[in-house]
Length: 163
Image (cartoon, rainbow, N blue to C red; front, top):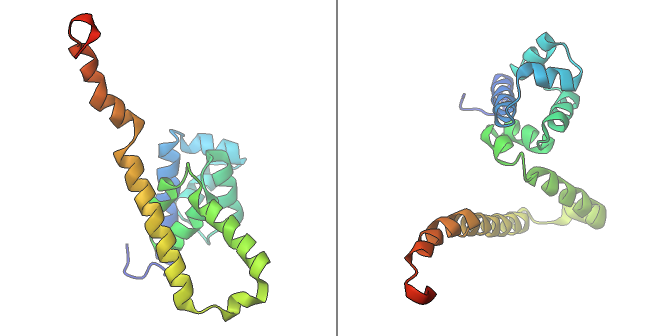
């Protein structure tokens, strides 16, 4: 990746990496996705390779047929982090954020322009810190881990069912 994630060649590379990673995570072939999108295989291959200009309509179509998050795909390209698109494909985190941003815009209107940048930074930092804590708690307390830790104890029951 180049040092400037906003350079068009970096966008194309990031888009290609995001699309391919999502397709692979969904265990779909390029032909499967092309058919679902109603595209010839070669056109899809050009799109997935990051060829041409970024096409929002195709990104939306791709996200629809792969059940992924179109807003995360675009954001991942813009910030130079194609892995974000895969990480949020299932929980649609960027779609949720975009919906909330749209509602905020509607509710606050022109007053948005009066907000101090540091207030937004503080609010977003707090929100992201809270989300990071929730993700860490989930990782620590997942039911799979809980079962893996406790299931072996089932065989250690003594006589009469007592430990």
